[in-house]
Length: 144
Image 1 (cartoon, rainbow, N blue to C red):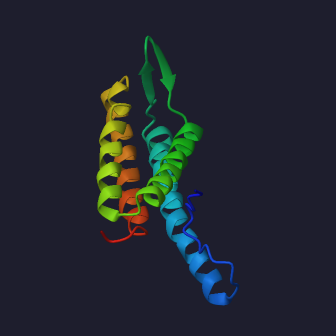
Image 2 (cartoon, rainbow, N blue to C red):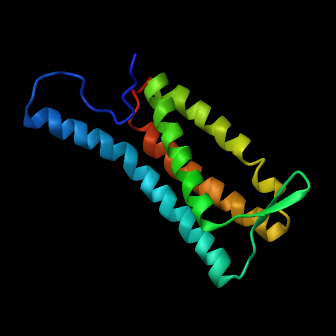
């Protein structure tokens, strides 16, 4: 079984109505990912360029810098994962519950940051992603 994560129609007929619904469904799921990516990138830029914070996280005994490219990539991956989950479970309540659990689990990453300012910044980024992706992608699921 193929899961259509962009929400397009599966019928073989052609026509403007089907193309419009397919495009609207895809846009409804991709737009929150773009917004979440912009929000995390903007947060990182303010923290790094304006506040001059160095964001680093611990991985075992080593410290890893949190740079802009991984922030963008991780946000996009989280969004695509949300699209896959909502397509698989197809129910808004189930998706929302799973997404909230995913968000809470993701907070383990920011807690490994090396400074309090880095922890706060990373928690803000994770929270922004959750606040944008969960309702944004969740609204494309069925009601119950």
